[in-house]
Amino acid sequence: MSVRRDDLQALLQELIREGGNLWTADACGITRQGTQIPALTHRDAYVSVTDKHRILVIGGLSGDERDVTAVERVASVYAESEAMQAGIAMSFVLSGNPDGLEIDSSTDNGAGGDPTTGYPPVDNFFLDANNPESRYLWRWAIFMAPDAVLEVVSGEVTRWEASDPVGAIGRSLNADSIEPADSMLAALAVGQPSGLGTIPTFRITVSLNQIDTEVGRFLANIAELTAPTKSPARLKLDSRRDRSPLDVARLLADKYGYTLDPLVYTQGVAISGRLRVAELDGTQPSTASDVASLVEPFASNIESALQDAGGQHLAGLVWCEEMASATGDPRYESLLLGAANLFLGRPLGDPPPVCDHDYRTEDMFFAGAVLGRAFKITGNAQYIDVLARFLLGGDVQQPDGLFWHADDVPFFWGRGNGFAAMGFAETLTYMDDGHPLRSALLSAHKSHLDALRGRQHRSGMLIQVLDDPGSYHEHTVTSMVGYAVARGLRLGWLDESYRGFAESLWNAASERVDDDGGLVDGCGGTGPQVDARAYLDRPATFGFDDRTGNLALWFAVEMERLSRV
Image 1 (cartoon, rainbow, N blue to C red):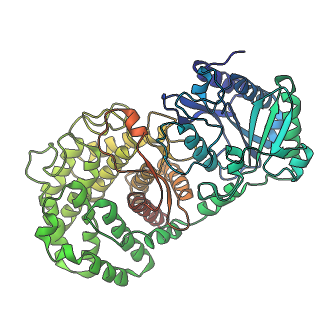
Image 2: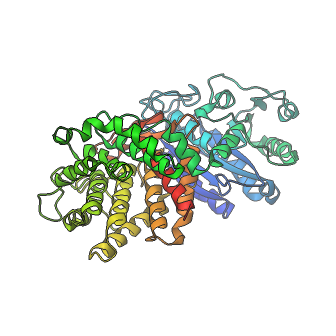
Image 3: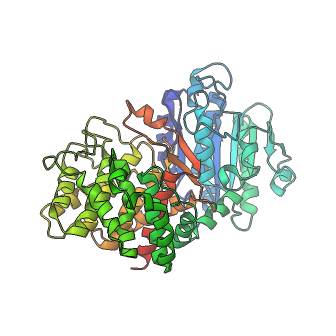
């Protein structure tokens, strides 16, 4: 049967029907032409504990429709076999190169790239002009962390390859070593892919009429293992997930919060995070002393610190309240109130003077971070009223609960929604229970969180563009929404039905924090973009990153605080 690009979604749905409740339709990336890379995710693919061997089957990297047909056959055989399903959880990438199905030449993806080679990719996540498929497939497969990856390739002569051809399974299959060295399968089995561990890999080149027999041989070898043998990648994720929130918070507080140049929220939130960790650990005096030296230029020259400051700069003063509490120094309150006063001066409901005119979601957090604290310090209702009216103004929240980036920017950017969630959470934290707008704010906030929960990936992550399933799993929105949910649970405006949401966000975010404070795939700085594609192409940082690190730190602290309630 001929398989073309436009047939893939129908094929995906047909296999889901065959499998009953085995799989969820998924996408593991987006091509330069905007095509979703289709996948079937097994219901046990991301659970923390399972008695099944997790296998990821990949096909179609070459763009050859016969490879897609071969993978489809493997999926059908698995769907029909209760014996296989009892001990094995198989997920599938039906076509790793869907645009290649429209091109006659072998391995071409239509953008000048070749998804069969060039691994491991080391840059251009996830904007690569020629080979985006390799970036998406690489990160998605590694953080699924299966126990093994099997590539299925159509061919007339049967041949097995294995990353460990002399291992028990490789010997049983009479496998050769996987080639070439820069193939995805070869690279997954070497070193520390994406900072994790290796994944055993296998490739079968086989004709359609031999698939059942050969794949049956492979799965029989897997089934003979007395218990699931976790891949090193899976073991690394397990060890990261086993850390307590306080463990992760301490780790991040050792790496972030030591600079404030310039004054900006991406560094100021981390300073606040350090102070919060110190409070949990009982070491606040020494930490506050260290922070005092760092922020002295701002505390000693308030007028200069606030000159020409925008919302993103003023939100970098979130530590002022904590420093005032820790030290008793009144300058910190004066600095914060000086910032808060810059948000005043326009009619209620309009964006404050230091915010952009188009109700951008980032300003919801920037305003919330300053005005809520100013209300706590002074009791002056003007601060909280300006904040509440701003959050409820504009037409940014849509009927489904999600937020556009701004009222004239109709795209569901992940971190934009994270900013909105945090802005509402900060406001509700400081607002009196009897405030006349509290009910409306809480209703909008819950509607938003419910919509986000409905868009959450099976891995627990939220994604870069919330209505585009193939976009990358993005760390900042996951941490920001997690922070908002954990805060609401701890302070009581969210009920226990949200606890599983918070925990799943935490598990996913913590898996993507390494032991050196590096983080995986935080979207770089992003203003309003001209189309959804531009959001998809925003670069994703990997490793040390102030923006991602400070938000993960706040999330970790909030999860620890929640655990102590």
